[in-house]
Image (cartoon, rainbow, N blue to C red):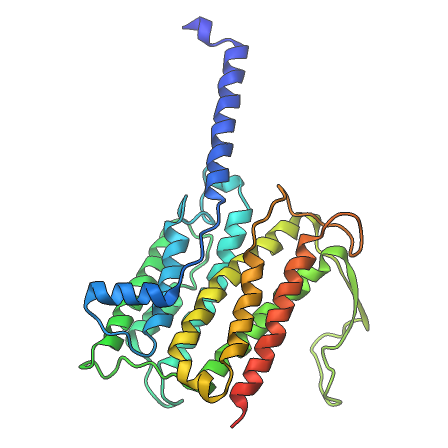
Length: 330
């Protein structure tokens, strides 16, 4: 036995373990493929003998995105406390970006899509599901994030079944232009934040426009007229993958909107605008051929992946603003 406990043997075994953990971490870092919400909704409706009605596709997309977070290779990694996932940061950042979009849609479904007016009752399944997605994403026990997310998914399944059951009058989804616009306004702010954080990868000096447009506006704490912003080198890849994960989730939600709000979009002649937004976001999912996120200067020799991502997200955000204006018109 002593012949195997030599320093050389122990060092070799340690190197082998590290190599195996690295292989596992690379496999777990593969991002999920895109799926077609309309096709998935039709398949699941057929399996459950349910009818695809208004809201069925977008609820299915929310369920599928949430299940992907839990069931992709390695499962949900953000709250892991053991190697190799505890040493990974790209995939957990991707997960958080997708989770943010999931939370935004779950809230919109609870407050807007499932209610006819401000005085109407909330749907009981969505009332339970929405806060279950808001548990700390890093919680790993008592309760774990995965267990609460799964409970939220179960309640979404129950809500979707109530939509397809004509006997359950409380299960409703209202595909209206004002409901859709309210959710899109939240997405605009989310994408705008991503764009600013990604653009700060090379450092920028920004004028303080927080009170622009209102001469009487005030803020609690004074700020300088010129604000210098630069993303920490340690946060570059985190911001990139968070934006990439959020875009991945949003693509599916918007494709589902294209189905459930088809008549609304046709009436506003806005279907092509939504398709353009989806196309811009799909560009954020192109394969990354570099082993690391490069941070070259704006017109330097090396690429700057953050600025490329910011460009696609900014274009999608600009198109979202135009879509919101179309929906606001009579």
